[in-house]
Image 1 (cartoon, rainbow, N blue to C red):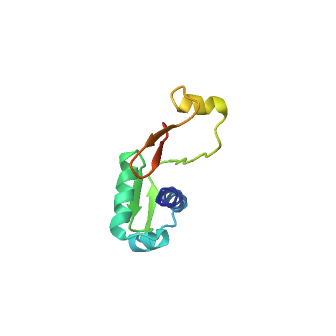
Image 2: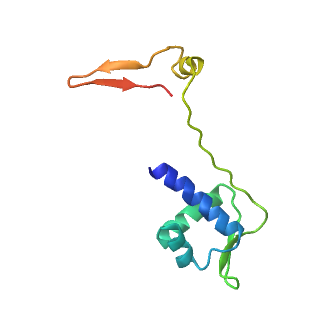
Image 3: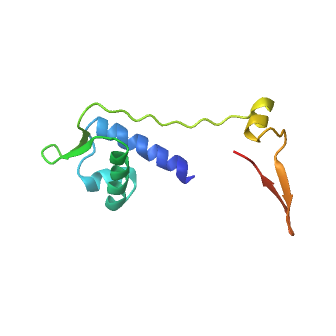
Length: 109
């Protein structure tokens, strides 16, 4: 799934930047399995969220200008009966809508 691939890519980027082992932009992009253009788009997104990413031509690596950390996480678990009621706006069961061809399940998140 693309979402999890994106999270893994951000985590790998962070580890390489933190260790100052990215190499030149083309090498860094290759390590991540993305294009150089996409690399700069992701870096710009991280910078817009406060990541102090810079590049050193002398050391040929991206680095953080000051100590910085990225913490990503995703938790998946079955819902308890109480959580199910809370997530579905007070209803114990999700709503079913009938269409012409099939029933559609609509979950409230």
